[in-house]
Image 1 (spheres, one colour):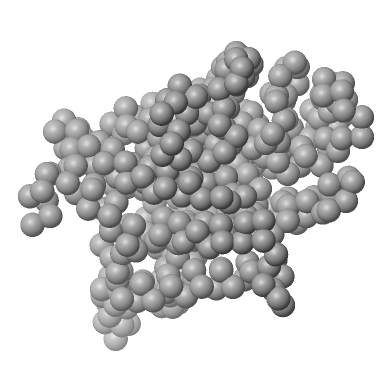
Image 2 (cartoon, rainbow, N blue to C red):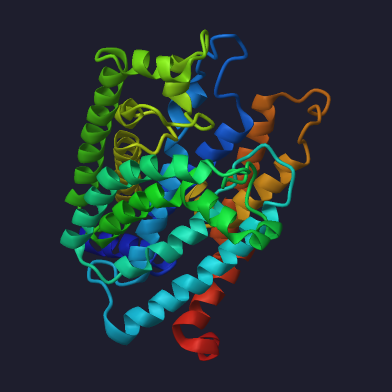
Length: 411
């Protein structure tokens, strides 16, 4: 009786999911989406002279976007061989599929870049990261670990050395806005911004995709893997943040950086806790010792990668728990997480409608966030129940199929 009941549950679980999809990974994408929406719609600093960090800024700033990027690497690993990377013609076909999918994402990002919106749109950088990771998709876990560790340590140093040179011309080689179609007319400036001087510097952010591919190459269905991801990610995240805080507050780093900035009264301590974007990190090697969100330093990359690893581990554990109790506990998160490109795009478009405009009567920032979050979750649940792809996910999937096998793949 027990064996038949277990078999029935197994058949139900298998029949209710799309083949090849890990619900925990989709749920983690849902967490990343809601986290990014929170940083877009809710204040990350209090509106006072000290720029006191809010709990939203302390919790999600830098971490939500990094989780989004790490999960991109996980998804690419799962689609290009899972535990054993593809080789030869299969690998070449998979790379073509990833490249064409990246073009779809880039087109969406460049279109959104034309909107007037107070949001740093990640999609163009996301697409370029897809292209940059292509040479690494044929590697196994050990060489990938070496590349990830080396990139986390070395890329911030190289970026620190190159940024002043890129910002020295007049005008400097950065956009100051989201990449849009018009920026293709100035490719040097666009590439400098995307790789080094913009909000999501691809040169350092490739670290996240390398970490993600490492995670995706592990046997994620084994019971011990999520535990290892959760524990190791938590330990490394805490250690990296503690080291960065000690460097700034106990070893003289913040005092040295305040002298470099030469801006009396500027709340550098608050900025180091939430978001270092907009500050030119030059003039002192102490910049590389911080773990500030969006600083792109080794400790920032290590901390945010580790947080992403822990979140993925936790979501995979919840997936196993859901299977054990035979309840779809992750449905609200995994539904939205399976169509993040579509929901993120709609979110940015909606936010653009309120740019430099007052909120509708009776609405607050909290209300706007919860309304958009609830809408995203509801749409995700409906699409998951109907087993539909999001419209932009369908476009990306179709492009990937064409790249892998030509138009015959669609028949």
